[in-house]
Amino acid sequence: MVGDNVEMGVYPTQKAMEMAEEQGLDLVEISPKADPPVCKVIDYKKFLYEQKKRDKAMKAKATKVIVKEIRFGPNTDDHDYDFKKKHAEKFLSEGAKLKAYVFFKGRSIVYKDKGEILLLRLATDLEDFGKVEQMPRLEGKRMTMFLAPKAKK
Image (cartoon, rainbow, N blue to C red; front, top):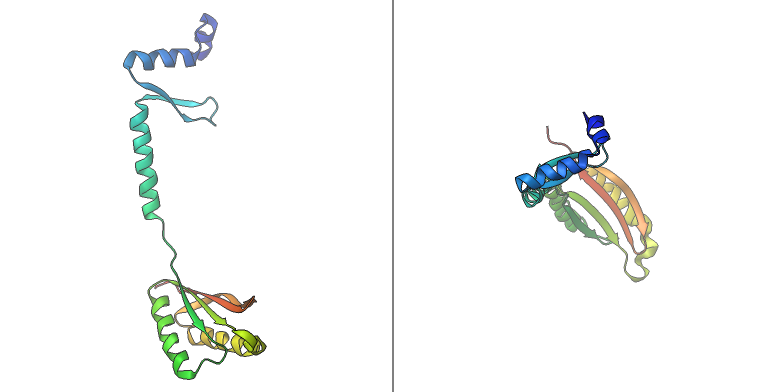
């Protein structure tokens, strides 16, 4: 049928444009990568509105990742450690990711090993709530470690 129109001198796009004009609507290209391109005769503003509506619905369904932070010092006391560990348990049980870091002030950078031991201790204590996503790594004056919550059963 397409070949017939071309032989008569009327191209499919011209015919489609004429049809759209007759109906008082727009010719909208739906899938430009298809061969031949897919077009529809519809109201363009309505098409844009529905597309925005679909995009908004998709965005609302997307899961938002929340990252909570807990800060330690290289010489954090046991009581402070336990207090912060309870907060970490709460964050992981709520489904948030956890960024635990040891901040080295001034010359305390010489206690890098203490900071790493502290973070590894936290990782073993929180094994039931989450898994280590990134092992402790020194970045400037911070040693950071990421924990992700375990999937709920």
